View 1 (cartoon, rainbow, N blue to C red):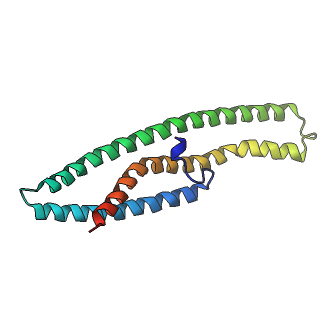
View 2: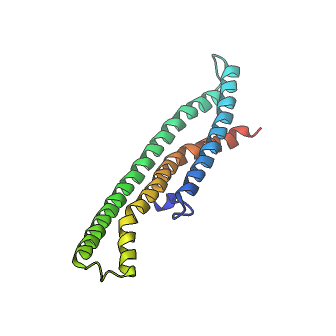
Length: 163
C-alpha cells in the first residue's frame, strides 16, 4: 500500500479529486488512441490475421483481464484499510464526545473558560473534519483502482504510437 500512496497524502480533497480527474482524462485519451489503432489493425488484418496481429489481439484481451483484476484488488485493499481507519476515527470521536459531554456536565457554566469552550467546540466539530477526510479518501480509493488501467492504456498508446 505504501508504494501506491499519493505524492501529497494530506492534500485537500479538492486537489485529490482534481488529480483523479486529470488521470482519468489522460487514460481516456490514451484509450481512444489504442482503440483506434487496434480497430484499424483488425480491419486491415481481415479474417486471416498474421502471427503478429494474433499476438496483439490476444494481448489486448489478456491486458484487460489483468488490469481489471489488479484494479479490483487495489480497490479492495484500499477499502479494507479505509474501513479500519474509519472505525478508529469513529471510536476516537465517540470517546472525545463522551469525555467532553461528561466534562461539560461536571463543570458549572460560570467556571467554563474560553479555552474550555473552544476545546468543547472543536470536539463537537470533529465529525465535519472526518467527513472532509472521507471525501479525499474515496477519491484515493478511485485513484488506486484507476492506476492499473491508466498505466496499461498510456503504455499501450506509447507502444502502438511508434512507427
